[in-house]
Length: 272
Image (cartoon, rainbow, N blue to C red; front, side, top):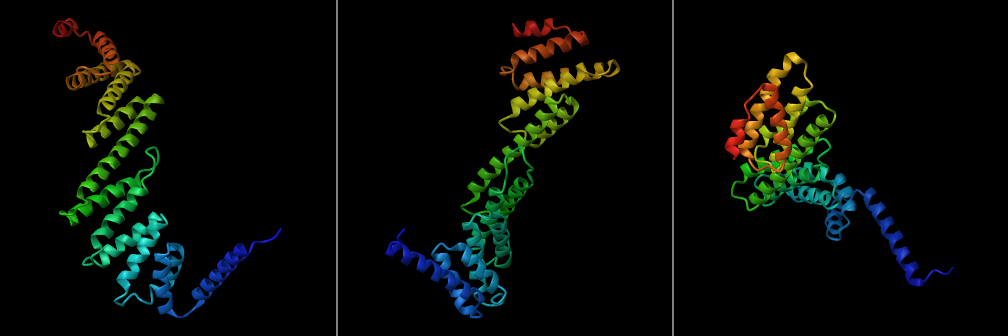
């Protein structure tokens, strides 16, 4: 099989380029390395730029060029989607150079890196909470920033993810028939995120969990727990009188009222 001349030329250029880069890594010419950092970054060779920066940043730490080099370092990590390291470098930049023209952007991008590390709702949400905190701190530090609306929107999105995580956890307890744990988890979710779009479903699941908890309780505890269910029922229908869960809610009320010997004719008359 013959190798075409143009293919051979390209291979030769690649080998030569790699050889030159290896020599550059071993070189003690830090000024040349610094210049190559910018060249590689401009050419989109971010990994090479990062490797050189790891060698030269200590050399230029106390110089006038340190700010620019640290900014390029954070940017290069962001470009290769290494959001964990990029976020760390952006935050360090914002803290070290608060008067820089890039300080506000660095603080915002540090929060954005946390946002990109936020996982699926069913996984641990530590990064989600950190992202919310970072966006909040950013808005406090830069109250007139044009990025404020974006931060608020992302915070709402992240909060909904926390709600969904809470919902999934509560639903798991519910499916496992751990009704007491389910009611606690659902109540905590509603307390922390009262305006969530899942509010109606969360409140219904809480009501149903309370009812099933009462049903499955020992006789000595049933009266108290059915009464709690009835109280929750009234709270639910006051907020959602035409709920999509109306049939299930009516069933819960009828069974609870029968146990507590509540006169349901008053309710029926009012409904008519």
